[in-house]
Amino acid sequence: MENILISIFYGIVQGLTEFIPVSSSGHLSILQNIIGLEDFGDKILFNVLLHLGTLTAIVVLYRKEIVGLIFGFFSLIGRLFSRNIKYKTLSSNEKFVVLIMIATCPLIVAAFLDKRIEALAASTKLIGFLLIVNALILFLSDKIINGRKTEKNASPKNALLVGLAQMIAILPGISRSGSTITSGLLNGFSRSFAVKFSFIMAIPAILGANIFKVADFIKGEEQITSAMIASGIAGFVAAFISGLFAMLLLVVIARKRNFYIFSIYCVVIGTVALIWG
Image: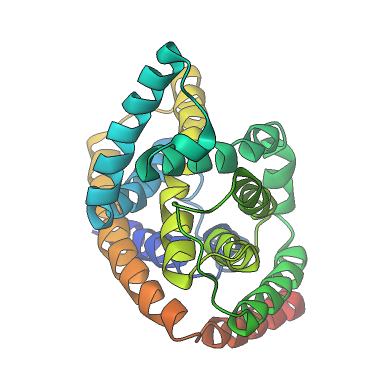
């Protein structure tokens, strides 16, 4: 029973901090470094299931947009064969697919830095410093004037810059959602589109990261037990429910320009991590 409760706790932390702009990796690392909750956090299969929970939450919330993206993807393939691939002539769904693909490209570089980033997660003081940097990013986002760009008129350059912000957010303590939303706003995105773009571009990011983890799991010697399966399911459900709640909350907060709430929180947690690290 204790294992299940710890799994649920991890799932809630993962779901909330994956989307609320306070850095999920930073929080999980701090919990492991300071409190010592390491029994599950270092298990590959458990981590994959946690991320699958947050991924499922995105799919559920943006199911209509994702269906449109699927049609847009296959439509783009048809255009490739007909050689009618000019960006200006693409439909909104086709442009959205292109923007997501471009924004994901910087993560290819990030994949080669994975082991070094994991090493950084062992430094609680560094995470604390990066959380304070994250607070400044969030504070900036509230000051940016609302743009009007959506998938209809955003440019590939805009998507690339947002993608670079996502690459920087692999650092533990820098929020992926916070940095990508802020970058989107700086590129003239409307607040609603900046949030939607940030969430949907997380799909290939989460899938890509967990493909490597699954490969490591297959190569490793981690044994699957009934207790592990039960813990994984509990973590998955907790991550899904808390992740869905966090996304709905963030949509409202972004619209009202209240990111300063999370900015204050990151300063407090970051300061604590610096002191107790």
